[in-house]
Length: 226
Ligand code: CA
Image (spheres, rainbow, N blue to C red):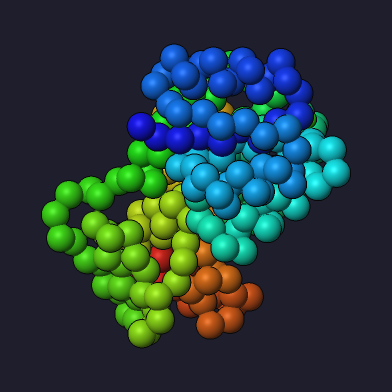
């Protein structure tokens, strides 16, 4: 049974999400603030964290930052904020996805399943992708650059895999979003940019002058076929 930790200070929302997740067959933990959320994440090792951004004291972005220092547990952010920049910052910090409040609990459950599927995906068989000094071990979901393993979140891994499997092929932001979400929800195309930025920071010698994941201006991205 997959375990989901909900970090949300609004009791009504937390209970609603908990009840839906219970019905959907998840084990559920709840925390009402960032500090106890972090502590529970560390002691109970959930498979997924649903994290409200607007928390008293330590906010959701701080929680994400601290979690990502030691863990790649999938994170879905809940945000009531109209400002797009918080979502982008959260994605840049390594959150996997976000759901805007007010949200449908059904949609949240579908998103959780989609992110967990990605985290679990083995895509069958012993399969490796090798491009230049980059090696992707698909069944083990490991990425090696040169002789160094790099730690990607599951969304970053999936995006890199899509791009690296067909070097030179141009993908639009919308295509990349579709490919990683599996379920079609309207998401901001700019979230792709945030994930690409993270990937570059992790795999490029100079993230400002990328040689692997290349921007196709006005269109999207492609993996270098040089
Ligand atoms: Ca809140």
